[in-house]
Length: 328
Ligand code: ADP
Image (cartoon, rainbow, N blue to C red; front, top):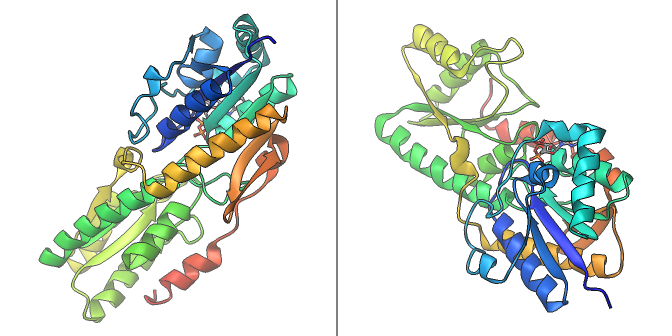
C-alpha cells in the first residue's frame, strides 16, 4: 500500500503548546506508518513550498517549549484564490493527502477555503484568545491566563507598596475571555472590556469611589484594542485626566507578548496532545473539512464551515456581575 503523507502548519498568533501539537503529530504519524511533513511559516510556507519531512529528532523534547518550532506568519495574500491554488499545487507536489492547521479564527477561514477547494483539512484551535466558539477552550488560553495571573500578582504587590493605581492591558483581540478570567482569578478591582467601555469621567468616578473604601491599591484590567481607537482616549490620556482631577496617576502596564510565551500549563499540554491524537483518529477514518475541540471533558468535531459561523457566548452579564462590587 502507498505510504500516506500528512502535513501540519501553525498559523496566526503563536501560543503555548503549539509545540506539543507538533510533537504529538509527528510521533503519532510515525506510529501509524504515515510520513509527517512540516509546513514552515504558516500559509506563507504553503505558498512558497517550504515543506519538509519531519523526524522524531525534530520534535525531541520540544513539548514544553512555548512558541512554535515551525514558525508562524501573517499572510493576508492567502485570501486570494490564485495564491491558494499555488499552495494546493505544492501539497500535490509533495503528495500530501491531509493538512492539519493549528491556529486562530483567521487561520480557520483559510482552512475552510482550502477545504472548499478540495484539500482534506483538519483544524485545531490554537490561540491564546479563546475565540473559537466550536471549542470550550483553545490551546494556549490557559497558559496565557496563568502567565497573566502571575504578572497581575506582581503588579498588585508594587501598587500596594506605593498605594498606586494600575491599568493592566490584556490581549484577546475582540474576545473578552482572557480579561474576564484574569479578573476572576486575581481579585482585580474592575475589568473594562468591549462589553463595558468606560468614559474617562466614569473611570475617574470609579477611582474616587474605590478610594473611599479602605483599599490602598487599585488594579483595573483593560482589554486590548479598546482605548486609543474609535475615538476613545488613550490610556495615557485617561491617566493625565485622572491626575489633573485628583492628583493621582494611573500606572499603565501593557503585558504584550509576555502573554504568548509562557511555559505551557498541564491543562494546555493535555488538551493539545489529546486533540491532536483525536484529529489523527478522524483522519484515519477519512473524516475531513472539520475542526476539533473540546466540550467539557469530551472531544468533538464540527464541520469547519459551521465552526466559522458559530459566535462566542456573550459574556456581558459575567462582566457586570464581576464589577458589581465597585460602583461607578
Ligand atoms: P489567527 O489565526 O490567530 O486568528 P490571523 O487572523 O492573522 O490569525 O490569520 C492567520 C492567517 O490566516 C492569515 O495571515 C492568513 O494567511 C489566513 N487568513 C486569514 N483570513 C483569511 C481569509 N479570509 N481567507 C483566507 N485566509 C485567511
